[in-house]
Length: 353
Image (cartoon, rainbow, N blue to C red; front, side):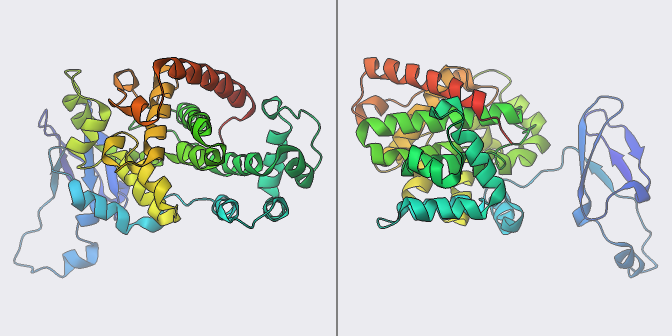
């Protein structure tokens, strides 16, 4: 197959046997270092080629970097059609959330769930014995942990233990290491719980979970962002555009919209999934309080160095956020201090993966 670089116009030949059938294949132009993406899914198979008319001369296919990639609803529906390939919410986390949401559930039911999953049980015990939860060396069993920690905290432990593997990804398209993504996720989760707790302590677990998975859409979109890396760099080259606006311009939608679709797949309650969808623009959420909480927690995380990408310094808090949450500037300073202290303690005890 012949491949042409659209920037320097050099043509290279790659032996067909080295190309993976039915997949996308990326190579770098040896001359100008451009990334050339070859879509082999649309190429005819050997059988199809043999069935063509003998009178038609077989021509070698020339692909160029300049080919238009799908975007907007075409790209979005293409991703959604492959829902089976998207990240799955760990079963134990889903079940734990269901138990916590039931008004008649109890600690025994929740702790029994953990004991079934030995890997999660081991991790929960490790976390329970961390200095962050103040029980260093005191917890000997899951049942013991449930008594000492209480219902809501045990639910938080299950969520962290289950979600950490899901968010433990290097995102090359977003220039995020797995550690960066996890630090940001933890920071937003902790911040969301702290903010929610000022209004209603019972709301803390729901806010913590939403904060932990609010950027899960990036995990899904990363390869598509990476394939369009040059387009993103060009669009953001003048320093006037955020990565979020680049997503909307180039992909046709952003990572928060894809996170919402994941929440639908995971059957996350609408209050949480809607909040995640609008966490960058809570004013469009029709008064969803959790959307404002996530937005503020996201802003606090960004401003304190727990970033989520190359343009985190450009992140702006939407006007009216503090007023909606009945907070003032002095409250914001207090929340920031609590977030920093809690996140640093938690990250020392709870690494990703």
